[in-house]
Image 1: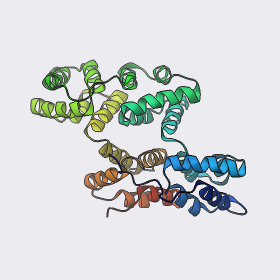
Image 2: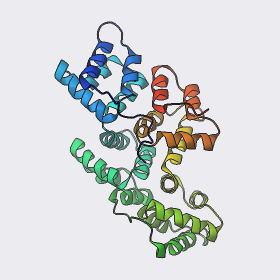
Image 3: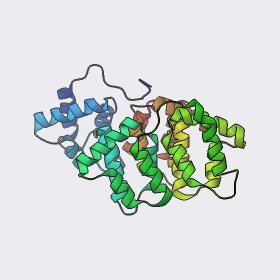
Image 4: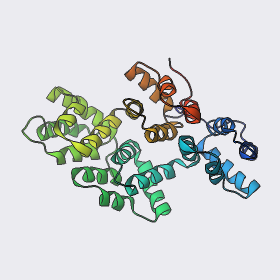
Length: 317
C-alpha cells in the first residue's frame, strides 16, 4: 500500500522555515489562507508535528491555537484536522461522536470498520491517554443490542489472521442458514463471522456464499438486518472487499442529495490523504463515472473547497 496517498512528505523540508511562513501568513492585517493551505497540504502529518514544535520554540505559542484564532468555519475544521496526529484524530472523532448530543453512529461505523487491527489498538490507547477513559466502556454505554455487540467485537481486534481454508464453506453455509435459507434471521451468526474473520478470509467466504445463495453478501445483509446493525455489517463487508471503494462510496454519499455532509467529507479527505487517496479516486471514477475532484468542485466553496481539492491531488476527468 506504500505511496498510495495524494499527500507525501516534502523532500527539502525545513520546519523552522515553514513555521516562519505560517507566522507571516497570520501576522498583521488579514490572513493569507492560500499560503497556509498550500503549505500544510504539501507536508506529511509527521512534518506538520515538527512545524508545530518549531513554531512553539520560535514564537512561544501554540500553532494550532493561532490557526484557530485566525481561521473560521469549515476551513478551520479542516486545518485543525490536518494538524492532528492521525491516531489522535480518530480517537477525538470517536469521543465527539459518543459524547455529543445523541450518538453519531455513522462515525463509529466508519472508523471501527475501516481501520487496521493495529490502528484500532493504537486508537484505544490514545483514547485512554487523552480522555482518561475506556473507549469500549464509552461505546457500550452509548449503544445497545446487536449493534453494540458487533462494535465490541471490532474493538477486541483479536480476530483471525489470514485464510482458514477449512472454514470457508462452513462459514458461507452458516451465513446462508442464519439468513436467506430460513424464515427469520440469526443476527448472532452474522456478527460472529463478519466480526471475527480476516478480510482475505471473508472475500473467499463471499464468493462461496454467492455460489450457495445466489446473492451477494451485501444484498443479504440489507434484506436480513436493519438499523445500525445493518449499516455496520454493510461497512464491514464493504471494507473486507475494498477499503478504498468503501471510502469512495462514503465520499459520494457525503455530497449527494440535499446539502453536503461537510464533517464526513473533511474527515475522509484528511484521514485518507496519506493512505489510499489515489485508490479512492480511481474507485470513485469507476463507480460513479465522474471524478472525485469535479464532485468536490461542484459541491463545496471557498477556502474549504480549495484545500479539499489540494488534498484530492488531481482530477481524473
